[in-house]
Image 1 (cartoon, chains in turn red, purple):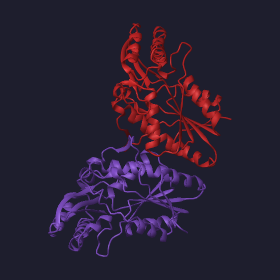
Image 2 (cartoon, chains in turn purple, red):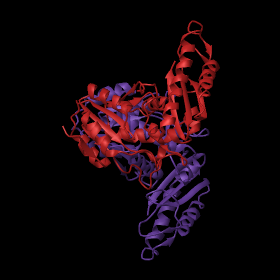
Image 3 (cartoon, chains in turn cyan, yellow):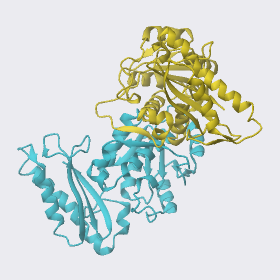
Length: 285
Length: 285
């Protein structure tokens, strides 16, 4: 089957109305520049739904004024081909999603105070707004997101619950390169040397997990600082790590910081700059 | 047919899934204390849809800290009876719509700066959030609102457009008592004497309209001040008008203030206190 392309909300909506009530729809929203992480979401959606919809839209409202909106990687033709090969039925790729008199945004209260949120003010407001819009347009049975964006996953679960959206949110494990680097569209910005150095991110998370699972496993709650300090000291061994923006230990449910890790676990997340490239990663402890 | 009552989101959602794709659903969201204005919305919904859903929920997030949430009139049993007599199929009347970890709100940027918005900070955020939630739960074909809440009608049209909600918004004319007072659940607060005095609101709007349609009709644009001053001077003839909160001339499309009324017209709206009771009304010029 050829993938069907829909470039406007109206066009997608016309299609949507023709899909019978009983058919399940799996939806994978993306900003394009697809990598193995996205493709694992698409495969899961393909396996579990009658119809698979993907979207590609580089959402301006989730980029800060000093962020990489203009140079965010765009590769529509190869992305399309990729999605078609994986059996995606419909691609929604609008060029514009905000009218000139757009006023209503989803405000996720508190998310700007979290580590990833305070590093990128307004980012989660933009994410919540666009995901809400896309879910309203696509009206899927199930939507798929990657664990790599840990705070985003927590946000989207809250969005769906708070806004009473009728969709099942599925969070899939982070897909990694062979050396452990999390797949990311932004990896394309790395020079070869930086790409080599970036493996330190995964190493630092593994070091922390080893300590968590080793010495302290039978001895919870444990001090969250021990975990974050392990990550930091490992990252500091790599000279190409130019900035450690944050290393955070947060609640799995709300992404609010915790000082002690109990039996319910935690999200260990970080953001660092390798050269000029900002990379994020996380482990669920 | 007996009206079916649904008290939780889950219960309504189960029902919603049984409604065939092709059936049209008309939805009238209310806060109860139904009056002839609400009932005109219900009748219109009944005339034009296969299935009619009404909701009754006194939404706490649209009341300010010093507003009348606790004493807002509640009369569930008579409301139910009323809706049943008009042929409503389903009543959604949840007791709680916000979880303890509710975070996501709809932020309608700019609405707090409008006249009705600045008089009630946070009010339109609460309205937008609850209407968004209700539309997601009910998933109607058409939703019905009364023109009496002029800014609310503009807001809801923006909400539906900005959030890409797939619903047709219908705004119905304000229903009035014989002497011209706009129907409102808050009219129940008025003493007999205040009720008599409240007719001045409609009179003041009529006086302004007469001037607009009379002397100036062939001579647009006209100075918006002439209109608002006519309203104010008429209101001031009634001693029981304790406070003129605002008299505003705004754009029909955005509710932003305008200084001149051109051929595209305007919304003339006001809020006054008669005794302790805050009343609003408006005319479309």
